[in-house]
Length: 347
Image (cartoon, rainbow, N blue to C red; front, side, top):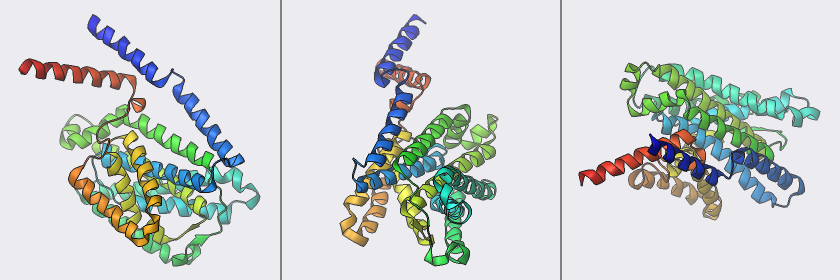
């Protein structure tokens, strides 16, 4: 026990050294928000750089939310672009046709929330039949859902049909993207390390065993899927008001493939990996833009190579210390120490 207490206090000291102090995250959030607000107001960052940062933030939301399903829960969803489309169209229709133009800036958060709620509702409807089965059926259902959303939007003239929808003001700014990105990371991080999150992880490891241990696996799956869909809708609303134009072709299987690449590039079951994957992929897309259509050949090829040589990604099943609760960090350290001692004893 004394050794455990000493190790605990030592790790606690290392933790506070790493994060600076217990106010590290609040100070970081306020500082980040102030920096983004200053960059947007005074434009000391080039508008092009600001747009890239906006796309990075949107992609982080998409990647972290999909990682909840594909990484932490161990299922395989390929329809994230469909939920993004629902959020984009719901938020856009509200700001263009419902909300008064004079109050668009004030009501913009409500439009984004409505987009997330709309995507979450559709995600709930998709999850109910999907999780009655096991295995790869979720991939088939979500792929079909993505194709259905695209086809439906193309055949509804009220939302622009195949021509798309325009008329949105550029309401997506760097501060708003920072806020929603930080919120999504914070919510999913807390969800993963909660008791509910343990149930999500147990499904990935062994669904039958977790069911026998009184985990309501179907309920856990549905809730996780709804949360993931909600944040995909948030990202869709931000995307629509950054680009000021959307059409159904933007949310096809290629967009879902982009999100999958970011998830598996950064690493499954890792929030820090999702952030790394989104940043690398977004910047790489801009660097390769001069290649034109060949860029869209190289990116799916990257996914194939990742699955062959690095199936878990850069940070697969690992987490940066900044995103881990102290108790988990301590438990992992002690477990690794005992495992090392056991290996040394056996040799």
